[in-house]
Image 1 (tube, each protein chain N blue to C red):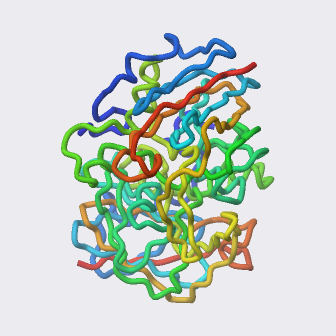
Image 2: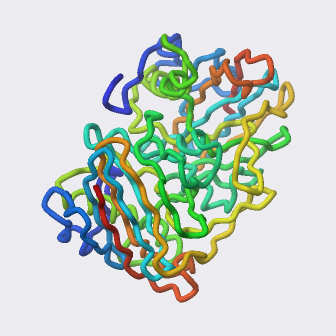
Length: 225
Length: 225
């Protein structure tokens, strides 16, 4: 295993599949994040990314890094303090580790169940689940999607796990449940600064976090001006 | 402000006050973490640190980094997934970002109310609260306490906020409350690998997270073999 958290633990199709050499999107075009893979896209301040749960069952781990300084990124340990809650709702700013809005959640057609508590899955996670070979994982998908557009991540922040269903009970214990979102549900995230948004179509196929079928699938996204 | 998250935003008495040049403790000796400051201590695998809420009202932000590789550290986005909950209880392993136990919570005489949701306070936090000059903060206390024993932090992980009282309601919203701990309450943390434990006596004096008096005070600690 690499000593540095900046290094992926392996590789997959993500590395060779940027949407463009530097991640700049064609406005209005629908892009895919393939099942088990990741992609990164550059947003200018004021642009909006729509992330679409095409099949309704797929968790999409999502990150945002400032273009000007990748050491500033969407941070949920800061974001939870900002919104005084565990799950953002429409109108909430999603803030950075410098306590500035980096994105705003401007639309959400889903029932609003997302997660900010659980780390991206990583190779260590799959090892604890008994996997002995390489397994696609969201942490590496982030690293590889960023590297595919020529960037390195300073760390792997806590993602916004879109549509991931982690209920918390009165004893502060959590459960791991299938998404309650529906095919075609989407969220809109408006960039409050120039930033790079990275997404991973979570490859978790051992526990039913991506639906009872344990079958990771693709999600889609579009950028609008 | 520094671009890198490794750099402190300012300094205080923490930098000149290590417990020893490399952080090695004298076993059984009671050390102080002064009000508004931080300290770091080296633990060998099997040793236990007792952190004491001397006055009962003080939050102590706590981190742990592997001695062998500081890129491996106690991580609550991983830890919550491991314990399936938001707050560790006696017997729980506190795991690293490589999903290995780094500490175990072996005793807790307090009512068991701690926090793993909220980022360490930082200068950006105090700026949002209207502070215009430097304000002591837990993120810098970590960086300075580590630097005081000759180490740099790779990042500022989500701390274990001992005795910090952040209730979560059924709507997944949180509140910020005074501690319910009592003078002399302590927790014992056993090292599961050689590690450096850093603590900050939280200098938050604007909201009553350190008690209604908004008066940060010191905490104490001891290391036992």
